[in-house]
Amino acid sequence: SAAQSAKAATKLAPTKEDYQKVYNRIAEIIDDADDYDCTVFMRLVSLPVLMLFLLDGSFGPVVLRLAWHASGTYDKTTGTGGSNYATMRFEPEALHGANAGLRVARDLMEKVKKEFDWISYGDLWTLAGVAAVQEMAGPKVPWRPGRIDGFAAQATPDGRLPDASQGAPHIRDIFYRMGFDDQEIVALCGAHALGRCHADRSGFDGPWTFSPTTFSNDFYKLLFDEKWVWKKWGGPKQLEDKKTKSLMMLPTDYVLTQDKSFKEYAKAYADDADLFFKDFSAAFSKLLELGVPTQQFVSSEPWVMQTVDEQKS
Ligand code: ZEM
Image (cartoon, rainbow, N blue to C red):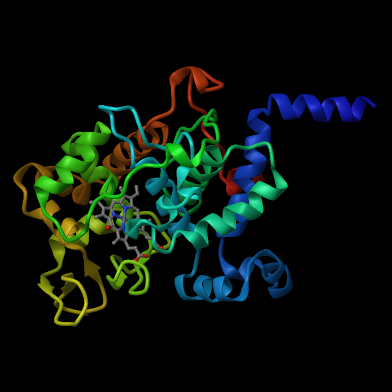
């Protein structure tokens, strides 16, 4: 029938509108718990996952972390890694220490994949990162589809993602390998305005800011405005704010105020939220395209997806 062939055509070439539908579904899943009645929610996720949601207040941050870890394995010298093949689906990459806790995010995205089976995992996960940032009041992040699903053999070796206990040389090794400079490194790390550390995932514990589901430049402001002291506890070395002891910084976060070059950018972002939003958007958009051959992209220019709010008005 005509309807069937129209559907077949859609399958061959999904349009921007099709991807907007996926975006909207992702936004629904990561959005506030109040938007759900419990029955809908329980059909969507399992009980342990629901409990995690209630603790974190949103799936936005962990979904953003999935997009980052799927992309941040890129090595510009060999051209391996990055978001193209979504190799975190496979062991051992799924079990790499850095990816602890991301099963939650992958399982959530699996629900979306079942409804929109034509999208590749790499496109789905990176689009989810875009939706997370935009729906949590962050900047627009230009994005375009084109990633393809790969195989376990394309999975990356362990150790490509940053180790939070290390210093400036390590941060530079890791991010320069992806092709970023100091300014982009500092801008990307501002994502830590969102979410928190979970003792059962990374060993670290606590949120960076008082509003972990709203994108802001608070991460940099707090780095400079609060006095940070080493937390006395049995866990890995992390800092806490002396005043309230309710916020945390990783050693790698604190380095952004200690290294001369990093500090310059961190200070600029603390003083100018617009500058941070603009630079984060550019660097994050670049991160999401690492490892994807240009000819695979379906459009010559990245798209700007609409937020759920924009579509209402
Ligand atoms: Zn993170 N990150 N990250 N990061 N990250 C955590 C959580 C989150 C580092 C890191 O070791 C950790 C970037 C850069 C770096 C997010 C986004 C981005 C956690 C806590 C650790 C340990 C995990 C847990 O226990 O759940 C290091 C060392 C980084 C660079 C030096 C970049 C770049 C990011 C995005 C652009 C986000 C959103 C979270 C919060 C996840 C959540 O579940 O709340």
